[in-house]
Amino acid sequence: MTRLTAPDLFEPGLFEGTGFYDVFAWYRANDPVSWQHPAGEPEGFWNVTRYHDVVSVHRDSTRMSSAKGMRLGSADRAVDAVANKMLIVADPPDHTRMKRVLNQPFSNEVLSRAEEYVQQVVADVVARAVRNPGPNLIAQLERIPTDVICAIMGLPRTDWEWIGRKTTEAFESPSEVRRITANGEIFKYFGDLVRENHKSGANAFISGLTAQNSGGARLTDQELVFNFSGILAGGNETTRFTLAALTLQLAEHPDQWARIVRGEAEPDVATEEALRWSAPGMHVLRTATEALRIGNVEVEPGQRVVTWIGSANRDAEVFDAPDTFDVGRTGNRHLSFGAGRHMCLGSRLARLEITAYLRVLRDMVRSMTLRGRPRYNGSNFTWGLNELPVVLHA
Ligand code: HEM
Image 1: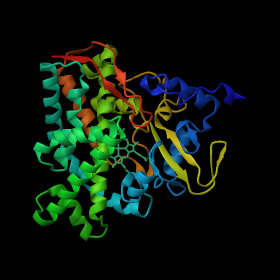
Image 2: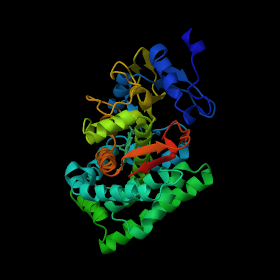
Image 3: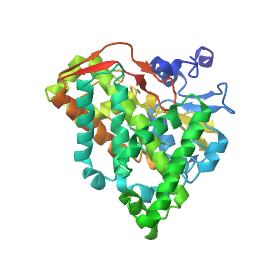
């Protein structure tokens, strides 16, 4: 019985390192869709580890609901409060309606106007990091996603630091009370902003979205507030984790860094490898609305299904030498942004930021040194480095 020798994917501390990649490899080879019921979870669920099975779950949004939650460990009450009012936990028709409106400011056309600004933010952050190296590069890199999203949303500059701090607190604080309080403060902040904008029309980002309201798809004020919070949540940690993982790989593999400097690997190509490698959105949850089959397994209606994006991104059926970080990898069909109808709203923006970071590194940085032990945050949901003692040298 393979199940008897299966390694424990829910062993405490597993995601504090990178050893879980070997565990994923075991499941892909021996038990690709496995039933698990770890302590602390109210019910069991199916774990999906192979690339093609993960894609089929993400594409099957008719039979795979997001409205009952999209991650392990979330409280039912918290999910119910936002279900079908926030993209990531919405099913059609609400999801279709809201995404039609919210996609607009994150389209290629609109974002191409932000390219120069993103490059400037990144250049400022890297210049500061080179001038004043600190013990943890992440404390500097975290400004990139925060400053970019705050600027796009037209938030007053004086609020950016507060927003960055509250977002981190709302999603990363070890204290549940602090997480709930910070979330409440973010909701209130956006609630006030939306109300105020009805009178003044001063915020072009909000006015653009509410103008669309009158022409077809509509979002209520409450939906706007929940989704603004979702946009902050979706874009901050994830992008920061990819930037950090990329920096660590380049510091540890000077040969890969040299390929970028010599122009043998283009920044946009290396961006895709950074995304595949880092997989900051480690898992995604769905609930089956009908009986269906995944691989050799029959899933019953009401059962939960977890897809492991980090595992899919290392599946040797799809990627050559999947455990090698290769900045020139082509045909890189990673699943870091998911797939299907819930595919990441901010994928173009994240790509813009990561590619800008690589260009700025190539232009401003000669080498990088790892000066200590990097540390991971230990989460199996939004996973990544929270300590990165790397110094950038001009
Ligand atoms: C490296 C950076 C990022 C990664 C790895 C990432 C990952 C993901 C993944 C895996 C999903 C799909 C979730 C699901 O299927 O349930 C998703 C959805 C989403 N992401 Fe991102 N994301 C990133 C950056 C961003 C940014 C910059 C934004 C800000 C605009 C953002 C906003 C969202 C939103 C609002 C959704 C929900 C979309 C929907 O349900 O239709 N993300 N993201």
